[in-house]
Length: 230
Image (tube, rainbow, N blue to C red):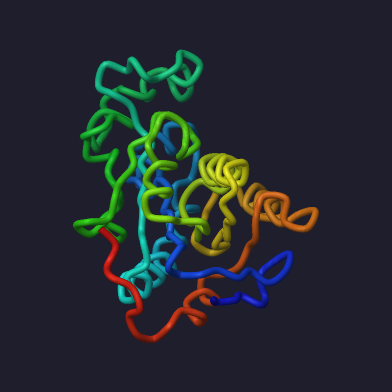
């Protein structure tokens, strides 16, 4: 068992054999110019500070064979899985499904829908395509975690107050213990980042724990103890 003694609101203990790193929606459409995030009037540069620490954590997690799962938010080309209320968001000419510099915005299979190059999944790392904000909604994530006997989640990705928060709340309801990596999750709004992290750890960890990725990396073993994730 490994323990992150300085996690908030208290020590977080986990068994790496039943833990997965869940990387949420680190997609070009959210992190690069021209995508859905920018179409809503956001500064995508606010999210890019998560890339370097997450890349370092991914390297360490891969080195010991930790289970790694990625998610992507996006929709079918005919938009049949996109609710009207969601479809109406954004500038009139830059909404989900409209052409953008990286292809149709937030559409599965388009260049912008995929994960940024710096964090590209390796062969054997599952990628869960989800139509909603939460990673458990209309996906087989729960079944995949059960198949791997996963009970704890190290959570990274964007955005903190939307897809990360929704996924952590869904995971909490299902009995998973979540540690959110403060420097590996990001928001377009600094105040949302701060409050979003505070809300997770509030009231004795109402949804989970919070710690920096450096604390987790320091706790990981120096040599492989697991088979590579597949």
